[in-house]
Image (cartoon, rainbow, N blue to C red; front, side, top):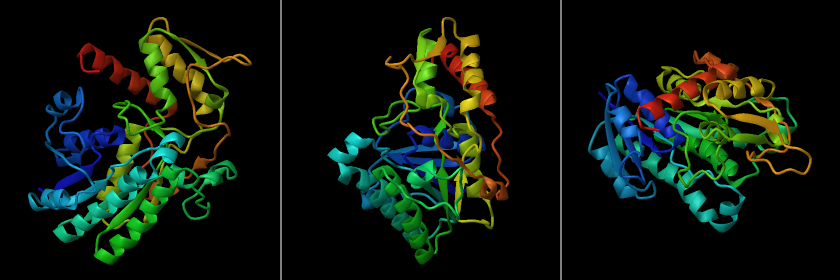
Amino acid sequence: MDATLVTGGAGFVGLNLTEALLARGGHVVVFGREAALPGAAPARFARLPGRLEVIAGDVNDASALRAVFAGRRIGAVFPFAAVTAGPEREAADPHGVLDVNLHGLIRTLEAARDAGTVRRVVLPASAAVYGESAYSHAVLDEATTPAVPVSLYGVTKYAVERAGLRLCAHWGLDAVAARIGACFGPWERDTGLRDTLSPHLALATAARAGREAVLPPGLRLSYDWVYVRDLVAGLLALLDAPAPPHRVVNLASGEDFAPRLDACLGVLAARFRGFRWRDAAAGEAATIRVSEARPRGVMAIARAAAFGWRPRFAPVAAYEDYVGWLLASADQGLG
């Protein structure tokens, strides 16, 4: 069986993707800075039918990447190593962001080209490529909505998409770019490489501690969060499609989360004693942080549907599943 390489596989999306690949019996090679997967992951993943290898290395080390491909037959690549930089990191270390997000991706693709065994590459673009367009378009469409990235993260992700598709076409690699929506759910944690964690993680943390959450106005703004289990199912659909109908695909919920926020928080309150929430009063500091101050358009998901994928988890169902994962993690001493 050919292996699947996941660079950045110890990150938030990477762990969920690795888990899903192992659950369906795949051979998964995780390559990144960590010599082992964190916390609960090894114990959980050991119970799954697939085979896991974790290899420590740097995506900018061309010889290390060549060794990964030389030592095994790799048929698919998710080059997901990334630094999700906030403004402070952008200003302080732009080279570090570019080195991982763009140069590391190109070196991974070069190694895949030279191996000659890779049948599919799923490139990690992002909703961040829409940038300013997200605030002036009600629907964010892959073909008609201009990409106007603002953050350095968004700029590099647009470069990943465009440069990745271009180079893969030159080198005979079959690639699809996933514009990944903002997500939340199992395995999210502070890795040191994501400067903006989701407010859903902060809410879950407050709930587990039985604390009150004071919500900022931004949490009530239009935003189409996607549950990470749905996101991963979409990534697998892009991996499996024998003849991709599109090469750039939004993976998002397609649904505004804000009107369902209170119902979702009610799920937390029903399972974690002492948790409560309220909106911040005028001039009061919120305890939950968000990065948005304007409502955003909703990402279109018709292209993803052409791959046979649609989200399974509506917002409340996503919270119910997430709470179940949190409780199981606590019961098993793994969370």
